[in-house]
Image (cartoon, rainbow, N blue to C red; front, top):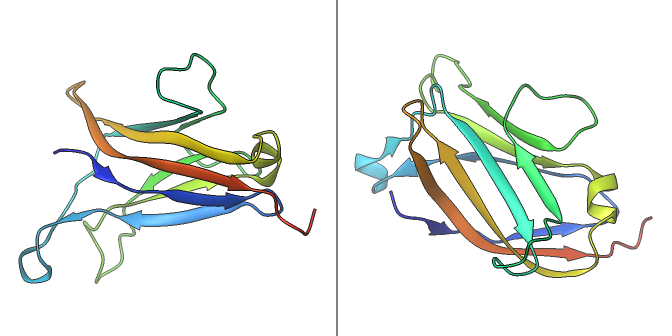
Length: 131
């Protein structure tokens, strides 16, 4: 799988929480990505070559009040096997990142240890008025 371009826009006055259902192919032939046993990691840097990491997210069981990536199978009758993941960034973490445009990527680690480039793109953090 080659990386897709996904850009994220956040604001410092609210948590960012977005769920994604990854699918490949056209609507009639789509195949949902099976994240069974996978983990994910996302980093945000001003430019990819920088040493400084402004935000690092890892998958794991969601902990209330912390940023991270939650991978789950909705498991309902109509959505079983349609794996989803949520990227959650709490307001306090966003407030520590200066306003601006950064680079980010989301990497999937498969159960066999292979790292896949799921997406890359811009990460724009804006100051929100309700602080």
